[in-house]
Image (cartoon, rainbow, N blue to C red; front, side, top):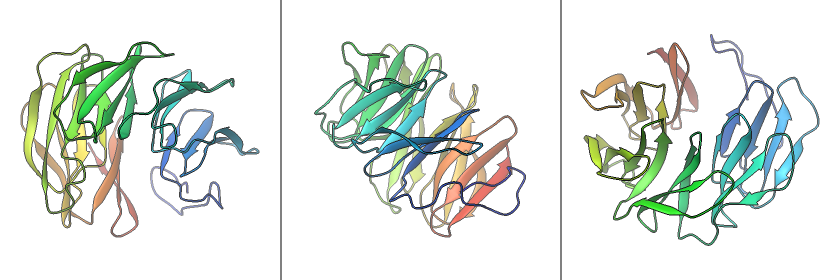
Amino acid sequence: MEMPKSGGTPSTFIGGVANPNSIVVDSINAYWGSGGTLAREALVGSPITYIDFNGVVALAQDAANIYWISNLISGPEQASKSGGPTVVLAAGLSGPNAIAVDSTSVYWTDASAGTVSSIPIGGGTIKTLVSGQNPDAVAVDAVNVYWVNGYATGNSGTFTVCSMPIGGGTVTTLATGQQGASLALALDGTTLYWTNYAFPGDVMKMPASGGAVTIIATGQNLPAQVVVDDTSVYWTNSGSGQVMRTPK
């Protein structure tokens, strides 16, 4: 679906997609994953282009490439936005479930292995940044990698938000006792955002370097995914089928 950021009537961007579960958008195309495929279509409309058929759990992008966790390969893959073959970055992992990318590396969490790992863009040696975790959503900036610690706790559990330098080092616990689970993290350069997937649930933010946690929105119905732009925070309420927005 699509609609103006300022609000309005939703319209169908692409119909007939079986079990869509993730989407990223650049200035030209929308890319989406489902249980079986990764595909793209121009924002102005065109025939769908299928990129991969190994299934998609999560998506990330940079200016040149699209990256995803494949549920059949059980690992991260990448492909050039301009076309070309799929590159399998790693395969046969225990349970990779979220992915992020910076200017040099691809990062992912593996809830089954309890790890946060990275690999150079294009392939290379896997680096386990931290183990002994229970990680889910992941995000990265120029300094740190961030993750939610508390995979699949359900909406009655609690989780923490953690960070560490992108090259490895000491884990910092940024926030504790967060209610429910969290399915997404977002960054805007200075601030970290997440949802507390609970009923009622909250949308949260804090300085990425650490500090006070602020509630952006409370009383939400199972808030799930979250993204930000220059002025606003957007999230989905999965319990009520709503897309929400509030100023930062």
